[in-house]
Amino acid sequence: MNKSIAISPGKVILFGEHFVVRGTKAIVAAIDLYAKAEIEESSWPSEIISEGTEIRGKITQELKVVGSKELEPFARILSVLKNWGFQIAGFKAKISSEIPMSAGLGSSAASAAAFSLSYANLLGYKLNDKELFTLSHEAEKITHGNPSGVDSAAVTYGGILVFKKDVGIISKLKSLFSDKYSLIIADTGIKRSTSVPVRDVLILSEKLWPAVSLIYDASDRIVDLANEAINNEDYETIGTLMNINQGLLNSMGVSSLELEELIYRSRLAGAIGAKLTGAGKGGSAIILAPSNKVDNILDRIKCCSKWASRIKISQEGARIISG
Ligand code: MEV
Image (cartoon, rainbow, N blue to C red; front, side, top):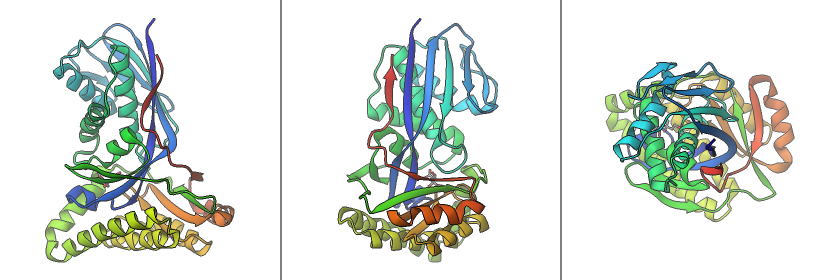
């Protein structure tokens, strides 16, 4: 029987989340935590199971979801493929993921990308990057309502990207790592949907735009300076800019006591930069530290994180691994 398997990395936003939704630039990196979609031919109604979660159900030939509403983004992907002229066939899909859900690490964009690649491959078609980005982004519109596309870009193209909504990738940066500096992710364990903080930030920005527009401008300048600092491997400046970016996000109301505790503990334990990553109000923090301080930081944030770990950038985006 025909079977196809694809994987997709998750992501961290290094600079500019939220502000990117209204058109400023952001810097995003694909990370070495992966979602996997294993799909085989079957009959209608098709079946999707997300391992380790309660998300499961069926999708009928008319592309109606029966079961968890979290399957709607996958039905949307099928519907776009159908509009593109694909002969949609029945299938059985198993989605599994190392990326924690609702933690700001791109789990939904990654699952959508892995599913899209694997399913199109099963139909005998290799999606190009633009098609893959579009499918993941369409799925994200169902999941989050108003995505900028930054998550879908990261999981599609991999590496470290400067991204702008409606423009796409402005540039791909070289890797952030030397032996001397490391990135750590720490998850508060507080789950939240991306759509709520995104909506709240948009409401605040509309209400107080004459003042808040300056914060958006500051975020855009931070991205420019961070871009330069990454190219120059100037880690101290990258860290300082992360801390300033955190201040901007805090001023927009998307930090939380739990995130601030992780951030301050990390800085006190030797991090040179620490900020929330993704939508905030829970979710994860990203921490930049000299490598010789990593163990100390992990020890100091053990108390207040669900998990924390050193991560690496995934230079590659989503890809087929079998079939
Ligand atoms: C979510 O990972 C990033 C946000 O900026 C939303 C978006 O850009 O779609 C909060």
